[in-house]
Length: 347
Ligand SMILES: [Zn+2]
Image 1 (cartoon, rainbow, N blue to C red):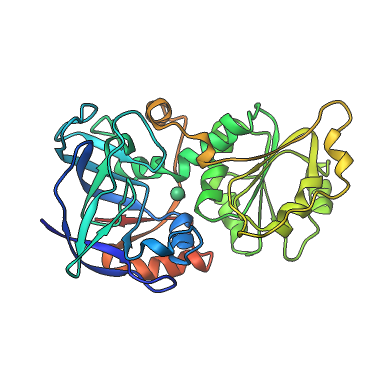
Image 2 (cartoon, protein in one colour):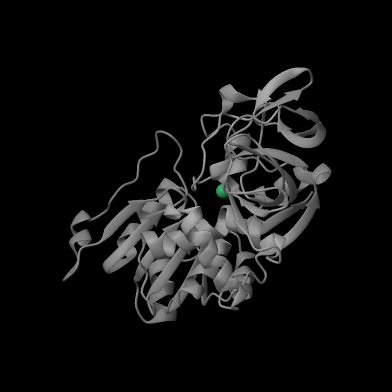
């Protein structure tokens, strides 16, 4: 079966949208017709070769999507033909299959255990989770990575209590999802920090309280002036920028939690200035790195779907652009320029 897919042929080059041939389903694999896919910052990192992936090119990309199961391989029990599924990169229950194979320009190439930048995709059973048929496609795609990572970072990793102050560093797609997640868990004040002035509207549009332009403003001074206190209970960094992490660790309040979601470049060091502040007055502070917010798809997706259906969790203004697969490189440029929250590909 021939399908159109976006292939990372060379590191640091535009993706190639071309026909690829799908291999046969092996044990534990599921064939999914992709309806929509999100584009995650992780794919920008993969295109740049920052994820240790250079040795695997050419390969297929994308790890958050929504689709319909077309066919199941041997041993698959958790989904059947016709099911609507969320495609995610974190492992859920079910079989862990071999790496899916495709033929690109006459050569066999592989994808990760989940991939979404194509009309159809072969996915390991433990990377799909079924949802009710009437769950909106875009919401399902966001549950594959961005929104689930954000919800997990705030609840599972930071254990945020209602009323706490949170600062989110880096307002790309994940940062935008973090503002929504902070609202969902009833943060007291939500502060967004970025180096692009256009993110001020992003913060207010998503329901955040305060924007700080870290390229122009003194963070502690603005926090103090606008919130009456110069520290926050929770900081979530999506930038991975070592200098920014070093500069903001001292802004943690007593008992505060610093959650690193964005990965620093290999070899970078983060400095803990005036380290004894970490002991706090009454409660010590925590610095923690997370993989995908500790998101557990089989456990968490039904909870998030229920919250969405009850109107408690909204995705208003999270998706700023839509694209066709053929224009995926233009969409990636918009993300690089800091001009998009989440972009959805219509397959
Ligand atoms: Zn992702």
